[in-house]
Length: 191
Ligand code: M6P
Ligand code: ZN
View 1 (cartoon, rainbow, N blue to C red):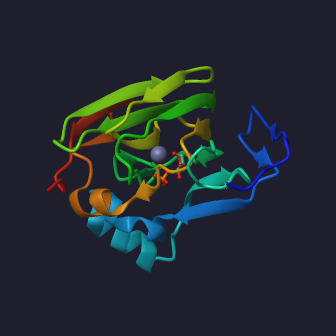
View 2 (tube, rainbow, N blue to C red):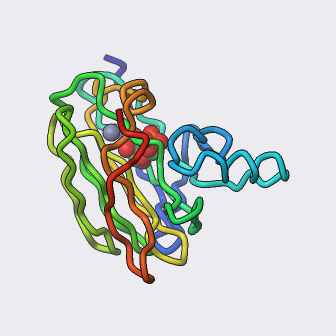
């Protein structure tokens, strides 16, 4: 493993930006259109030239290898596709027995987790919430509020991101707005 010099980062606790970051990942609706339930609406939005920025990930300069602890901040913008709240793509770890820790920084959100057998659990996240993603649970975050939702994350460097499983099956449940409240309902696109 590469021998690194100690360093620190500047985290803006109100906005969620991270400096320095090795890379900033930006995902628009067109980068994750298959994740949402209302496919007709998405087609209409994209054809009408509407491709909103859903979230940004500020990645630390820590290499993703065994023994390291890479970290990031994520900012999910407020918004919905139909009734479904803006959210991250969500992933399992390639090495399924690797865990992750999230810390809420700003705004209101939910952390939705799912085991390979389709069991779903969710945790509300507010500033100061430390949420634990145990090994074997896929994880996705959702902005269930009206302002940007930001959180910090740290995970084992050799965990790896498996997006394929979620892309093919989806999450069994999705977070929607019903009578002004965020609720988890069955996802019609879950296979
Ligand atoms: C958190 C961490 C990252 C992840 C990001 C966005 O910052 O879990 O590893 O990349 O959220 O989530 P996703 O990769 O599922 O789009
Ligand atoms: Zn992860």
